[in-house]
Image (cartoon, rainbow, N blue to C red; front, side, top):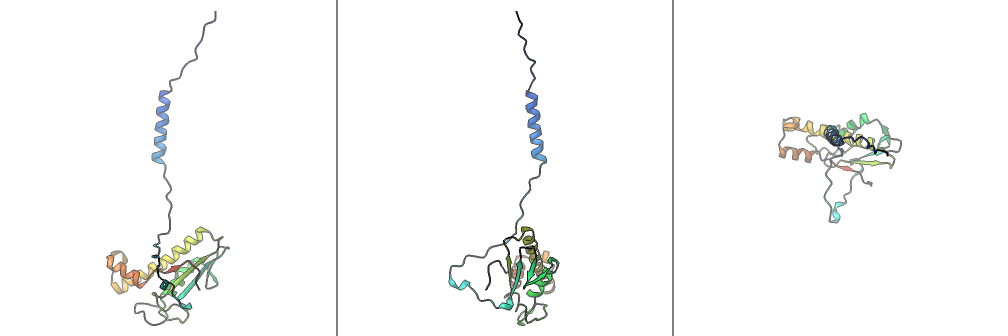
Length: 184
């Protein structure tokens, strides 16, 4: 008669413990990528017909991103390095002489003042997100530098030491007006 041999058994209890410890280790040490976005506040919904405003052509700075990943300002191809300075010059122009805090050259082809200036940003469907974000960053830098200069020269404080009222004032004197709609 044959004797039944039983296969050796492996104690699997400790394997489950090891697997659980490895799982905890990977959960603790893994970094989870967080998405970064563009921090913008959308304008309020307009419920009347007076929301459509006529804007004089000289108060619109047209920036176009084409499908070849090029930046065009008023139909002239420029480098991303020059964009911030072009925007600052346009915004701080003081074309109509009404801006007492502007340092612009009073150029007849640039904006009347920062309150009337609109930056129109249009992009081609094949424009990369990377270029779009870089342009948005340069626009933000231009406004930030103008506001910093205002805080230092007019308010006499560094921008980091302003209270809420002064920050609100900064946003009023250099309003962040960017249009991503088709302008006419």
